[in-house]
Image (cartoon, rainbow, N blue to C red; front, side, top):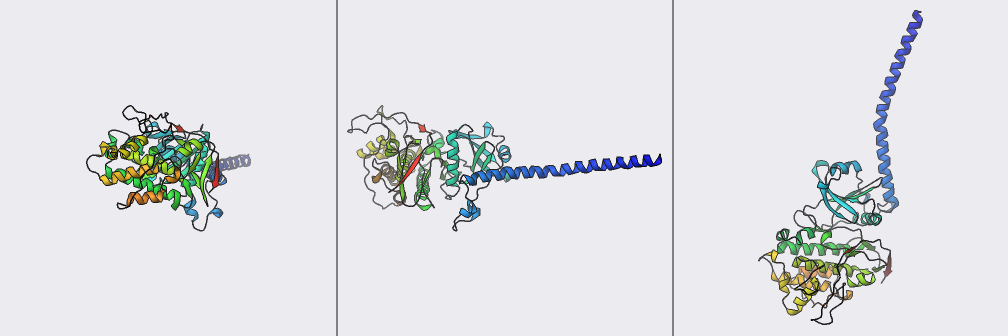
Length: 405
């Protein structure tokens, strides 16, 4: 009987030890399994990006660029949820056809902007891929910097450096905030945008046409330095390719060149036209879109052209600038703006010439020809009325064909 009791006690002890061992093993395996799951999720995200040619495989990276320069950091969804306080409305910076942009704070207090793709936006997926393909490989002080991305389950996000002063349009077209933009700041913004566009057209590894350059796509940092953003509509040209033709036009009416708005033809000169509109808006503090002057249906380009021909273009300057400005710089910016919005694409300067004209006080600038009115009819004479339709942003997926010139 004693032997039976002893055997029972031994079996009980073995059972207790076994249960504690299995319990401890499960606790140890839990974090390991979770880490494996997280690694698996991140690996699937990385594989998705590589397979769609968003992040290049290391074998595809040229000898000019190291792997570290091309690999884009992947953020966890949980990290971004914490950073943005679960994407709260209080942290929302803006909203567009692609979805919403949120302010976030990550490790060590770094501020970020999180562009969260709307789950119902089919076109947004294409813009997401396009933006990653382009901006991940571009580095310039006048282009917004992409810090990383997040692809988990149905979520797709882009993470950018945070711009303290948000977009140019939120200040330029606000009666009170526009007082922050004195002439020196406006001139620096115009020149900065020109340098960023020159980099895209000529100085980067690729020839890139932005196709949606406008005030809301220019972001301002805490020193009011401009940075071009939103490359979802952009297109890469390679080799001798300089022009493209699209079946469906995308972009924003009011900034679109006539040949692009009417015929779907785009080139570097299309971006030059948009820059010209933007330059005139910065000088005047008025939108080209929906601009009316003294009950005549005339857009900002028509108004500027009329004053230029009458020799009173200095009247275009925004009164919010105050009394401290350089009349020569103002007139130079107006003239460059009008040169950029000329009706014929071949008459417009390229961005290298634009940067040169803006930076030189002694350069002789050519006289601008009639601007292109991509909306409505061109006036037959000075006294005829021009009809302009209401403008809007066109958000459509494009099918693009490239033609070498």
